[in-house]
Amino acid sequence: MDKPRVLLIDDEEELVHTLVERLAYRNIEAVAEMDGHSALERITTEQFDVVIADLKMPGLSGMEVVEILRERYPHVKILLITGHGRLDEEIEMDIEGVHEVLIKPFKIDNLVASIHQALAN
Amino acid sequence: MTDAQGHPQPLSDDLAFFGRISAGVTHELNNVVSIIEQVTGLLEDQLYSANAGGTLDVDKLQSVHDRIMTQIDRGVELIHNLNRFSHTVDEAERDTDLNELMAILSVLGRRFAALKNVSFDVSLSTASIIVRCSPYRLLEAMFAVELTALTTMNPDDQLTLAMIHESGRAGIRVTGGTFDNLSDSMELSRAQAILAEMNGELQLLDDDTFGQKIEIWLPATVITDVF
Image (tube, rainbow over all chains, first blue to last red; front, side):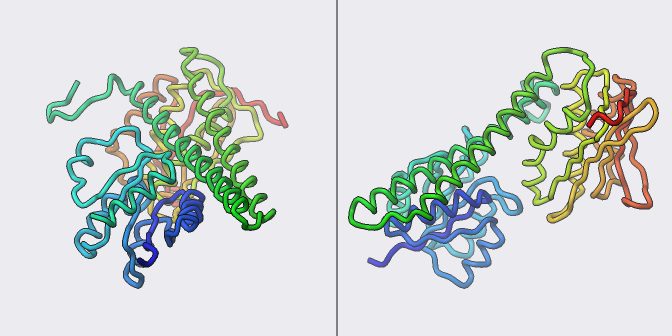
């Protein structure tokens, strides 16, 4: 099987670049974007199997990115990451199409497992 | 406790402000910890790879060290200012140097600007500006002004807060946004009410240099040439 291609979106630049490096050690090809608009632009020209987006970002929020992805790229698996200790009820209710929400800080093994589970679904 | 529409309500506006600031800062601290977790994990990956027969790149090790130190410095700055902020509730009223509050605002307030992709410039005064006030309530008014100003701004704008003073009074000038539609703002009204308690005032003004500006003025003792 080819390496899974993952698009990571988070305005914490250091975090996403480090995750890209760590995923490479685990045979996952990841690229990073720091905001939703750049990510959506990138996905028009490149194929991705999984998109991982932070819930709270400047510009488009993670949920707005999810809504656009669900409409335009329904085949792409979606994971959300968040630093919020609790998820608002409205977010929980509106989370259809999202495979999993990971709470920061998370272990890389949990992220890798979530990526593989999303791909297996 | 809920409002007429059933939306949850905070215990009080003062507590809501404390909650909003601490939630924002701890959210950012969580990001700091997340980065340190992943960067130290990267070091582990590099060591594992070296033990499995790969090479250990000294430049990469140095990079990991530098990245961790950057996040530690960021975390220390946040914790230090959150601590200073928490201590502003210790006394209902005291002589307060406005520079001290501006320094707290410059660190704890930048996340709100960053979430709008607005750059946030806070400049302190070379004078010591002493205001008799509740430092917590004055910070509440200062944050309300920042957040209200941000509602008028677009990505890549710059919000500038500068200290101003003249004989017997001092304050803050806020520029960078379009403020003419803010006269009905509830946040700004709240800031005005807080400032009035301190015999201060808030003004929305046109300005030849800045276009529009918000000015906060308070009775103050200004001691120049302190540096």
